[in-house]
Image (cartoon, rainbow, N blue to C red):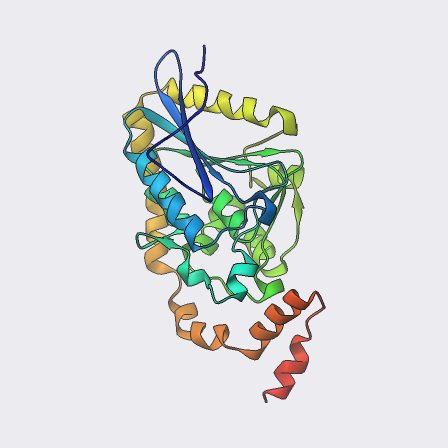
Length: 279
């Protein structure tokens, strides 16, 4: 079984994403979408999201592509979520949309199964992007976790609730509410990833998973993905009612502003002091 070399697509001139494809000698191909901001630990901005959306749309509609790989440039990070430097200049998480889709919805909207190949940190938005993929393969240097309550970044909606389907309700609440860090092995044990391999073996392992998927009937794989993803559609319709009612108050609250300011100033936040002051 042989693979052609990865080829960048000349019709897609991206600056924050690398978009490549390769094919098998037996037929079938793979698209690889790489968040290419390694100096920022592959944190994303609205521009990154737009480029991701364009790449996902093309891969989803290319009949020669059977699998999509999502990863981050370098070995330090898959992604650390929204770029706090960009957010500090006025960007907000509400701008993490492409064509009306939230970044996680790009994975849901893709007709082809998506494999997250995680090296290094998968934190915050990078973490829930990884677990929303159909499969998650991790290098042994991977670190997983949420950041929201630690840095004053409120999150709600289906991609929060969906974690209960991945690791169970108790563990999902722990992950989101405590903002702890988990090793690749811990992630494997809780069902957050499908497999852990040495860092220098990750690309080889991803190829093996792609080969196995490509050996199966493509329309059957696509309809199975759609069937599983219908669970996400249900969550999208049901989740968020109560959080939507309180969301404006949370976003503008002194506690959230204190968390954000403390994070930028690299100090411990004092939530209860600012809460007392607003009474």
